[in-house]
Length: 150
Length: 150
DNA sequence: TTTGCTGCAAACCTTTTGCATGCTT
DNA sequence: AAGCATGCAAAAGGTTTGCAGCAAA
Image (cartoon, rainbow over all chains, first blue to last red; front, side, top):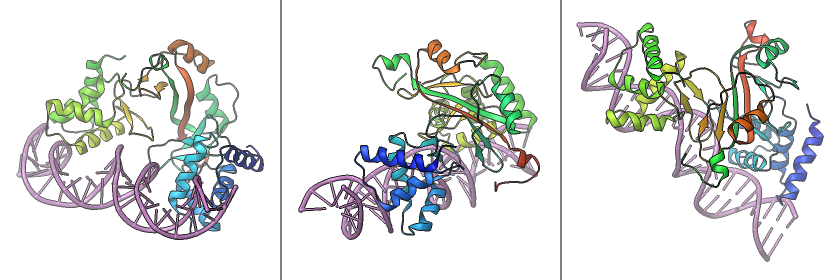
């Protein structure tokens, strides 16, 4: 994983550039996300922040994560069920191995995606039941300026 | 796309095997999902069902989609924002091109995923901003019988 | 006739928002 | 001192559930 300290500094730098204030709660949330290995949920971040700042509200966690998302400093894994998960350590798209039993999320270390399924299965020992491979972007029509009615 | 009629028959067969009743609302929902080309949301299915059966409730749509999901007869695209989308025409994992502007979802026709991003970009004309490539399965630990606390 | 299915409304859960107060800059 | 950030509570989606009546088998 990326060095948490370095990620933390990068995130602070991004906030500074955007002229956001550095509050204790915000810094704690940053630290948690920068060192996230377990792709925490909002609730998990919330619980952890409250260990140091017990009065922190859920709304504050949501608002800070939203800001970090906008700055590209945290990656949101949008699962429908049971809340999204976040990765502030590697805030760029990358494959995830999601265990549907224990909810663990692992990052397989792959460079080339040939025969990805079999390969991931061999490398991680996972029994793959399903996968997501969705690409987000702008379609040709919208690139020409039209919007929201295709 | 797969033949809607054939998919419809497959879905009915699956329901019969599972001893579910064939109500008019249910059949209509099946038909809509079997011929879905646009990966409809629950709300869209609901609106469409109500064109033929105006008293149909949202709960019924949700309940039927849930059943079809369990039978593997519909694929759920779990987007956090604005509700999930469903594909009853090709109820198996496959890549999707999601336009973040008009919300259109296309199915690129690819067999081999080499250099997938550039390739998809060239083939579809999409400007790719992001992607999802999540694999769902069971990790080695859980395959050994342990659960939900990794 | 039996039991699953439907419609309605309320409940749930996650996320967002309004507002008054507080704190960073 | 100015204005963003916080905490609290209410609101806002989307989805699920309880229950009584209805209908498929």
